[in-house]
Length: 229
Image (cartoon, rainbow, N blue to C red; front, side, top):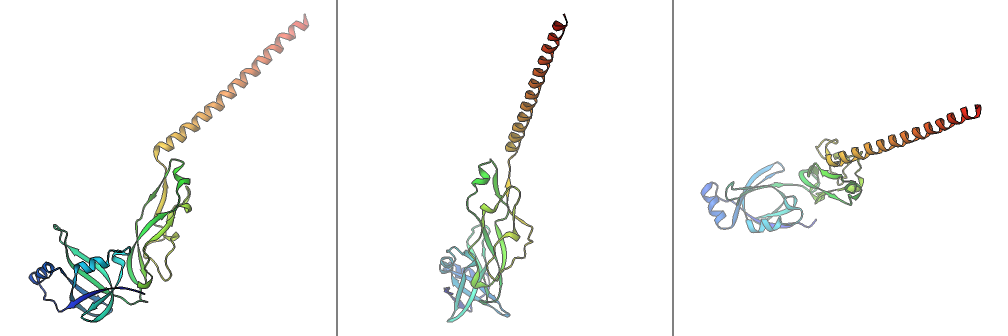
C-alpha cells in the first residue's frame, strides 16, 4: 500500500516557549504513541502535514512518518488548535500495523435516485452522517455509501443494513437509524382532504340513487289507482 511520507524530527524541547518558537518556524509540535512503545516527542512541517491530509481520506489517511530516517506507519489521531486564532498548535500520531484493526470515523454518503420518494412530496432525512469503524488500516474506506433506491415508506435504513468493508465492524447498535422517509404535515393534510372529498362524493352519489328509486315508486303508485277506476 502506497503511503505519503511526512518527515519528522525527534528530540524537540518541551514547554510553551520552545513550542511557540517551533510554530513560528513552520514546525508543528507532535507526539507519536501506540503499539506498546514509548511515546516520542517530535516536530513536523505543518505545511507538509496539511498537504498529506488534503486528500479525500482526510484525517483517515495512513501516513509513513519518517523520524530521522526511521519510518513508522501512523494515523493522525488529533490536531489541536488555538481556540481563538484557530491555528494548529499540536498533533497526535498513532502507530498502527497493517493487519491490526484501529478505530476510525467514516462519513456516510447518500447516493442514488430518491425520485420515488420525493415525487410524492415526501423527503429523505439523513439521521446519521458518520460511523465509527474498527477496521485494518490498509482497508479504511473513504466513505460508506447508502443507496436511496433501497429506501421505502415502510422501511428505514439502519446501521445493520450498511455494507461494511471486509474485516470491519462497528460498535454502533444495528437498530440506529441512518436514513428514513419523512412526510411533511402539509402533504399528510392534503392526502386527508382528498380522502374526505372522495368519501363525500360517494355519499352524494348514493343520495341521488335513493331519490331516483323514490320517483319510480311514486309513478307506479299513480298508475295503480288509474287502472282500478
